[in-house]
Image (cartoon, rainbow, N blue to C red; front, side, top):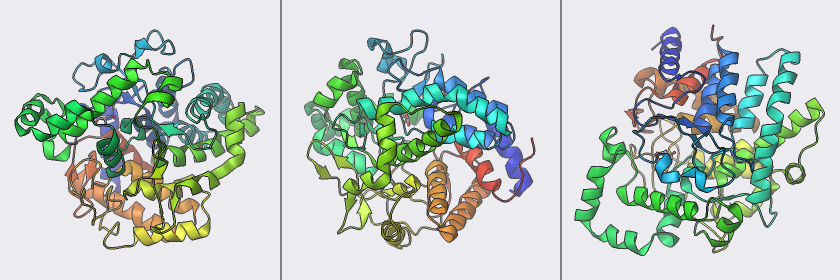
Length: 445
Ligand code: DGY
């Protein structure tokens, strides 16, 4: 695909998934509105239709809970999704909005970045109006993270489900899940090939995408289990922080939140608002809080399991994402680049492998255990730029576009040969390809 064909194809995919004011990630597998997918979609849309990009964020915020949490899915009426409203039953919480069905946990808080990226496309007066409109919801969302998910006031928020990280079955989380959070029933199930086969046949997601490209059946059952556990606690964060098995200081959420809080501070200054107390405190702490997640010997960041107080020493691309936070000391940046350039780890022809090549988890086509994804590529692209790694940024941008040009807009790709996997006609892949292309040419409306 040349540039013009890429632009036309990306717009086609975005139009195909536009359900009038909000965008589903893709028709078959994900027929609802996802938090970070919509933010990435808006970041691409702003390149040729700012109003539509604004609308994407407005509809997303319709799902916001009374306590400020923005759930990671705002459900539509579609009935085909495998983990739909009947699993989540968000109305068990008094915080859930009365007329919208949602999940009960959030996702990497990309909304603030999307609001600012859209703002950059608006004339100054319109930008101020946009910021004023968005600020109350954003401030409530940030405050929820810091107030309810960081009870020990460490500056690092706690994540309670791997779906919340956006990187679903990534190796680092699966290690924790298997070690600490498999119920006795699931441990038994793990031993029975026949039962697993039976459950596999009932999976809705694998009727659309080959099973070997999705998460394992055991992991999926464990994800459902964790949702039921959170649901039994009525998604009440105070109870969850006391009783839940998975309480993780997660790298992706914290890196995104640190940068988002920096951006929110800028918005507040620009429109003359005062940040709410916990968010204001977090703003002053900056990214040195990430030091708690640094592993000196391995020269890399890891998730922290608050139940054991230990770093989870499993490498995946989440370990490199702190570059996105934008405030790492130079020595940390250089240490992360060593992993990026290591041919046994992340130096693959198509960046950025979601698991390193030498990991026992690595599989080039299995969901978050090897493939390259446009959304994490975009985060790393921004992270490289923010840290002065211009060469890495440009290499990643060009390779990402090559992957799209050669294969179209899929959910994810093999980092070895760029071959597509997962669902086709994927909105965020289309949107982020446009955004990356816009670095070198204008995208006409
Ligand atoms: C899924 O259903 O696999 C989703 O990734 C959850 O967000």
